[in-house]
Image (cartoon, rainbow, N blue to C red):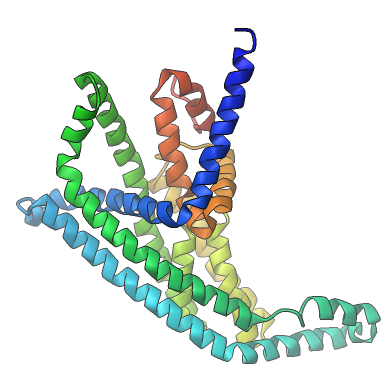
Amino acid sequence: MKNAPLLNFALAVFLALSIGWLLYAGRAIILPLVGAVIAVYIIISATDGLKRLPGFRHVSDVWLRLAILAIFSIPFLFLVVLASATVREIAEVAPIYEANLDLLIDRAAAKYSLDKENIWNELRAVTIESFDLRLILLKVLSGFTNMSTSFLLIVIYAAFLLGERKAFKSKVLGAFPTVEEGQKTLDLMNEINTRVGYYLVTKTLINVLLAVVSFVILKLFGIDFAFFWAVVIGLLNYIPYIGSYLGVAFPVILSLAQFVSIPLTISLGVCLGVVQFVVGNIVEPRVIGHRVDLSPTVVLVALSFWAALWGIPGAILAVPMTSVLAIIFSSFQGTQFIGRLLADKIAK
């Protein structure tokens, strides 16, 4: 058939668009399920690490995994509740912050005689005066409310996935006509578990360490809601490249509104920026290395794609989701070229 390549390309584009639409339209259902799978990866990797310790070798895998799920769930639920309360508190002091910023801007305008220019008044009307911090914080608060609902679904899904994991191997082997095909699928899943699970566990531990160090710095500078901002910095560090500095931007900007001191704000930004630089350019490359094996360009494109589909959760899940796709593509003859295009380094 003459037009077979063109037809195949058109069908592939249609399939990709259809899958993209389904991922976007069904994000309320798919996101908690994906989050549960990611949680299971972390729990299994943590369980394997604990089983190597003398005191945990004789503990049942099922009970150990459920215990880890509970240990992670309770603090995370506490953080969601704390974040909601903190956003409310920030909304209450928002008028004070806005007044401080207005004072700082008026001083700068008076110093450089900008307040006498008509263009300054027009610019102020469409930027500063139209900025409503309370309204933004209320939208963030509604996001935390939705997050608590999604988190409950993630815990339930993860508990059921862990409960069925024991019979999962026999189900996979029975789903294929030959044992070889079933075993190949299991080997593929084991590779995903090893690479993605290690990345997630290591990244989580690094983010916890980053949050602790950031909390100490914020507390030393006397920043309001230091614990909340430290948690935000740790969570946003899951987002590659831009997440870490985006997390730092929030407390740095609000420190200017709190103290109305440019030197203090610059000092805080430098301290937090140095910590982010050390973690992102020294600690993570040495500890994580090239486990996910994704090209930096691919990571940026994946970040844009998943963020467009699922917002901030999509940005956080961009690297593990794309890594899973890269492993799957590399495992089949017909799609190996896609896996090679996604990879950072091609094995010789």
